[in-house]
Amino acid sequence: MTDLLERFLALPNTLSASPILAIGLTLGAFFAGNWLFRRMGRPLWLPPVVLSAFLLSATIALLSLDYTRYQQGAQWLMLLLGPATVALGIPLYQQMHHVRALWRPILCTLPIAASLAAVYAVVIAWALGATPLVLASLAPKSVTAPIAIGITEQLGGSVPLMMGGLLVTGVVATLFVDLLSRALSITDDRILGFALGLNGHAVGTARAFEISRTAGAFASLGMGLTGVFTALILPLAFRLW
Image (tube, rainbow, N blue to C red; front, top):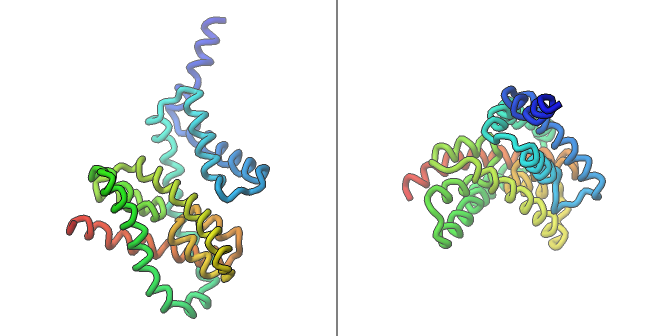
């Protein structure tokens, strides 16, 4: 009986040696987070990605799993981030006629907004005495994860810290875009989608698709262009700084 109990308690660590446990826990937390999100009435301040993250963190802590092992197993899912981001080009292509009609405002808005998204975070952190590691980790906070990871590594920042800033940014940006659009009576799905994608990356884009396909397409455009612009400009700016 004692031997059986010891084997049961050691089961999580045994399973964590393969990617099966990490993938199962991640997908389980994802579906559970979405279920809770619907049951709670779809609150903007608590999107499903946050609920899933909390559930996954609690499960890992309760099972006393080694996080390094979990991270290694979850790398299989991380590989899907790139294709998932590229797949957003499909709704964007379907709304290309709207994009062509607004290419001038988009080109004028993007460099300013994308630059401010990085600058204000870095300036505030610098004023509070943050180290270069923290500054490099916060700078790409408005960029979608697959691109932000590469930028952070190039700048010498911390990927886990960047991912935390990425999550907070997505939630806050989604909430404030919704609140400000109501206060300013902005109802154009193209504007809302572009603002959500540019400031809230994947979290904002998920919210945009809940509004409409047009909003989702413009969010995809804003997220993609912000990622490309930041990847080109941010490393150069850090070298000059």
